[in-house]
Amino acid sequence: MTFAATRPAPSDARLDATGAIDDFGAIGVRMVFAGGEEIYAQDEEACMIYRVIRGAVRTTRLLSDGRRQIGDFYYPGDLVGLESGAAHRFSAEALGDCEILVIKKSTLALYGEDGARLERLMWAATSRELERTQEHLMLLGRKTASEKVASFLLDMARRVRGDQVQLPMGRQDMADYLGLTIETVSRMVTQLQSAGLVRFDSCRRFQIRNRAGLEDMVVA
Image (cartoon, rainbow, N blue to C red):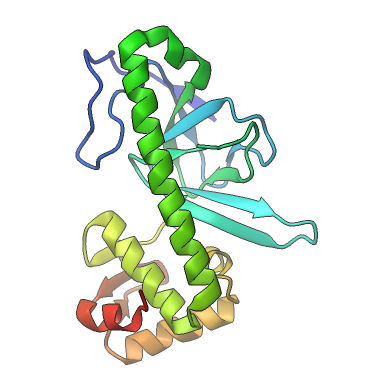
């Protein structure tokens, strides 16, 4: 973990092109994490907010029997570590080299109206986080293995805004997120390729070849 120089403080709060908060740089500290490095720990006090500047992050929770559940994946512009309670229910790790803007919650009150605007934007981000959590619950509880993998690939394409996607996570991460075994994920990927819906150029790089067909597989 290393520190990076912060940018100059902007004059007002605003949204960037991804709809993410663009003004936290005024009060945050940039930190660089290597792939696999922990950003914050499960059950750690949730006194900080983290915004992804570069790279990707996953949140994970270890169960008492050693199994791992992945909460979500986060990309540039996303806020990580938003909690309703006092502690982090999941840990967060860098999927590869990434840069994170770290903001102490208590400092928002020192920035007057600017801080209040940022807090409102944080609540908007919390609402989006809740929506994604609800969608994840539906995916885990009601979708078949093929629907889960199709939904995941469509979501990754949507988040990078294109049909050609470089995944920052491996098959085991996909399996833990979808509640499947790695063998099942690989089998479903093979089926989707055989059906002409996607094409994997490597384990982590794929192209959507038939978006309409892939969407037809996903039960809303």
